[in-house]
Image (cartoon, rainbow, N blue to C red; front, side, top):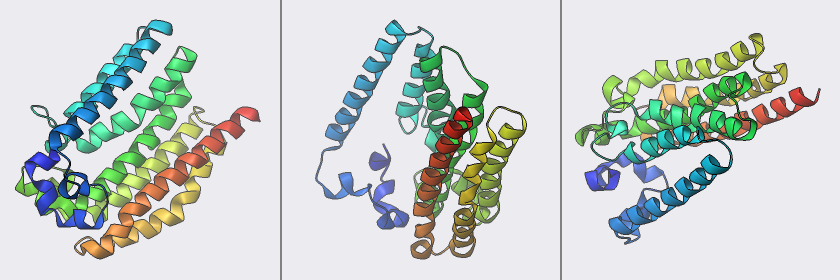
Length: 240
């Protein structure tokens, strides 16, 4: 649906990313890509229905929310990403929904640790989306895609970026203080120096796309490293 809106063609920010060329340069038909996506979604739903039948019927609630977010992120008439709800949908769909859902499938209940760790995990993924959308603001605005960067402007990343990552680290600290997470999960804070470097790039180059783009890759690195450290902290905390 982004392709059909035309935003991929006019978005200068996407010239420095990889992935948007699939439809623009490969010659693939948009219907073929949509069909392949629907096949993948159908397989996912089938696996979910198996878990509903084999484990607990309440799992279907997680599945329905997941399918809704997956399809209507850009699909009409909902178009979450076009209504300024993309980051919220990303946080739910990549944090609480899969983390708490997986915990529920394996344990049969919703644990405090799953809820606590799902918050920063979702925020880490949503940060990738937000930081990545900053260079796309003008193109997104031209097709009516009202992202946070469109609504607040590129410059707001200088404020919202630090607040975003502060919320991530603070949520982990509060989880430990509340006893929902083992102290070892504080290992995730070791990625703070990389975040500082990332935020320096966004602050200085939010209007210079080529120099800004490395910050986007760094958000992925922060996500990967921080969640890996979370895993180590959770395992060690369980063992000791």
